[in-house]
Length: 510
Image 1 (cartoon, rainbow, N blue to C red):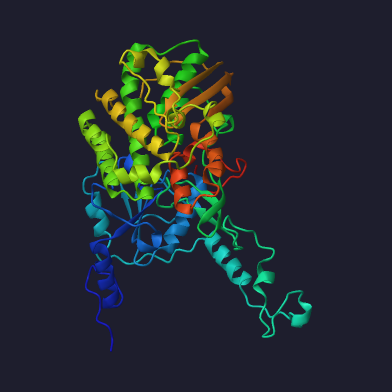
Image 2 (image 1 turned 90 degrees about the vertical axis):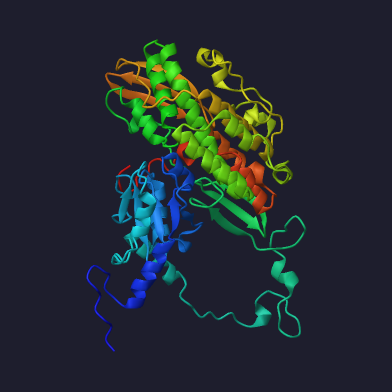
């Protein structure tokens, strides 16, 4: 029996396929890249719109991507899209291309109040796009198939294989496990290696951690990916004035903070200093970004520890912060007190060695009792009565409480609504200067030098770069769930850590 012809304006093919497409569009699940917290920071209220987020691409119908992905994450995004079941749709936040991903089915912009409805309209009967199989993925699959071809081997007689067998011909367990490593309980087990990230729920988007596991215990773990270029003189050419905007684009989570760092360095290169008027405009924006960064981290950390209440408070507060309606009283009501089970869950996890804390500042040090905050030395902050938040726990619980306290503090410091980028400080195209600024994760430092209008030195020290080295000590011997909590509590940003192979150039626009 011939299938009926498709009505005008509907997708061709069997009726059951069209019905499946319509059904998938009623409540399409979305997988967000690099993570829902990053899209929230970009101005897209994912949680407030009631979008059903999927934790893996295999459970999603829509891939929602921020095209500002650095090259190391682009192939991972393409693999995620290839893993999605059909029918599927690809959506970009804003403009931009993202090879090897194909052209998106829809582009949305922050501030568009109808974007959630537009996602559902993607499944209104449009034809399924062509199958997606980029060259690098086809080559990997071909290599995998060749590597798994079955080969017959002649193992010889049992008596000659060097292993002990019993009367029934079975190999002795003692012989089988004699060369295996022993776990803490003395059992011999095969160890496995696993990568967590770059889109793993419970870790910030873009973070990749490589772990060697002995059952459910972590033998070792290490940082396995970064996207930040710390030596920029090979990547930035031309006059000095665009440097602040260039730094802001490199760090989408705190653009105004990094823009301010560039402005300060340029000013110092000509022995100048921004005045009080500049700081009056800068402080509300810097504190708004600090609170937003902490809230975005909190929305991920809440998933790691299993607190839906804390996740809801974080995403709701982040939307209110963006709208200018988050008050100190509201923040204190939500974050002033933790549930008792969270304190029991987090206490004692991930203590940081004291020798590391003595050489590094920021929230990790302040949570361990060290009053290390660059803002305390700035006259603009002192005029507002600023005092650093400081605790004495030195574990995942103390780091959570410290950031909650700073959310409340920053909500009070950014009450004045200031919009638009910070004004630049005029600078000559020759000179040298250094600057430091307290970001949400700790001090960021910039050293620049210009000669004849060209950059000869531009060195950045970002707080996450040093903190990645804590992962091995914090996770060794922990159960996997506790190890992930310890890692997530550090608030590491892949946008602040060096590229693994700075000389390698990947395809696509950077």
